[in-house]
Length: 271
Image (cartoon, rainbow, N blue to C red; front, side, top):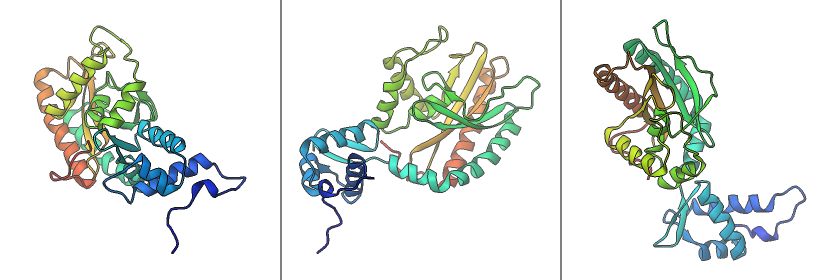
């Protein structure tokens, strides 16, 4: 009987990267183990040393591809791989869905409406629908944005699985831009809890004086926050009264996009 799990330490080829192959073997093996497996089970199944298995597993946990349960001592796949696969197959479709909604929302609020996703350490601005006012904000695609002081950064971070969120937190320097900038992990986590409760995030002049942003997350069909839409404008136009209506329209838009991506009220958000 042929095994689907190769003896990874007996393969030899000048063009192979052994540890990379072992890491992929771990991911493939755990994809068949919905309840996860212990370090001992994994090293035996893949016929690799305990030291190698431990290093690979902890690297994959640190990078957010695996989750580790302290009580059961089991490792299992996170939803990050699923999200990567979803993006590779549907990134173009995602933009096709988002762009018309950006323009519709822009026409309602008259302000610049933007779309962005998470990058390797910060957020990445993808596209925008420029506001109708003479004075408006213009960004360049690919521009990174900080996660600790931006509305889209907070909106996405608030709904990330804890392991992945903690990895992004480890990269954050909490740069202070002014007296309103959040500069500690503790205060930021409190802010994320507030975002989760209200369903949207604010940048209340935390990076640029006089600029207010309101952002909300977009969820894919797994419940993973795959991006955010946000509205930017001067505080004189985005007053508290205007902000209430803006939040309503924004949440309606992100809710519609999420549903079009397969997210529904019965979908369990990634944790």
